[in-house]
Length: 154
Image (cartoon, rainbow, N blue to C red; front, side, top):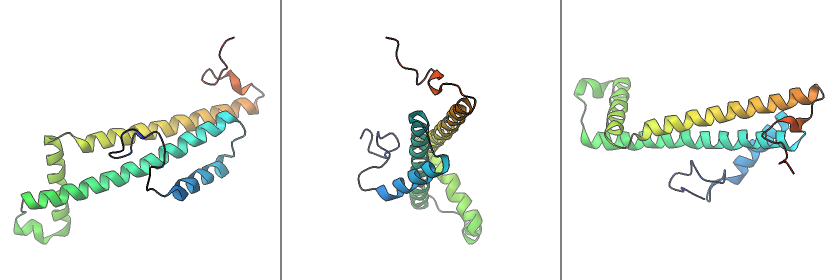
């Protein structure tokens, strides 16, 4: 359970205190959709499921961070009355304040965006590998011809 400050890099897809049923529902939906026939296919479905769960956590973390930054920015800065009177301008004011605050600190929003992009790439790679395995099986090729899953040389 490394890095439990936010859980984005934890080894397990479900952290203590989180709803295991929600993750299992997601996994079962993906297993039903892809119907993996081999261990390799099952692995890629699990990669997709774990990545989607972490992507959901990333989105939730981003929303919480923005909420926190909005409330923190509200304490530090006061918009002028014209901005405060318009809900859209007020939201943009606080969003700008949150980004400005992030740029001064550890660039948390940028890190979350990079993490989100990595998760998207991981999902797309897993989907690509899953499709590649299916094509090989369809054409009668050995699924173990994939070097990632090839048995070690004896």
